[in-house]
Length: 238
Image (cartoon, rainbow, N blue to C red; front, side, top):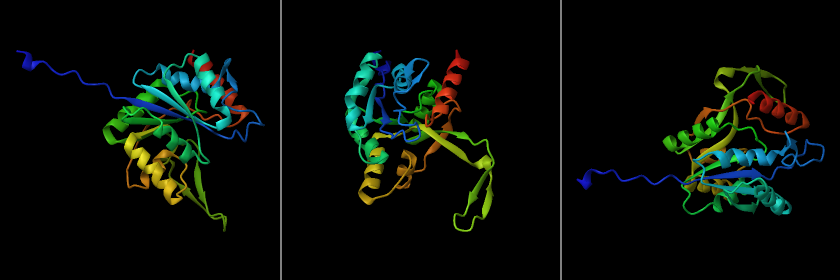
């Protein structure tokens, strides 16, 4: 009779790599990750989102070398127990994320990469990205664009109207099989390929990712005005 008992499946180990090495160039000299929204640092909000998601097993923070202790202490102070490493990033986002992926626990089979400056990511978006990458090996959050979009020739100034129904604004998390993502990032680093996000790196290997529904409140903090907008989203959700 015991032969009919189902073997319990082992949970998938998922690491979230938080890219926290941005320059904060448009914040008037203030570190945007330490700026506050509703009394908490931006980075604390971001880390809490992944701390609270039961499908995330581990968090790795990739940051500037001079902020490693600051961010490690922030994680400790706000009870972010899933943080296993705070690693020094590189000279580019690609190198920084690659170092974060390499620092992940050997058990990790899937990795989500998320901007430290996106503190308002909903749990549903994290879950949709995980579901998408489990079905397709790689996935990312994205939202439809709201504005009319034109592509401009920088030399002539001529422009072409693009069909916004076919255009998406990319967000994070962006997730992939760990080995696949590491190979894609290393390929870019070894061959001097400049990419702006993880999906672009994966596409250099011929991978075709899927996009899942993001959220407009999952905005990236870039300017002081974004802090006000993020706080408005937070207040609206209460």
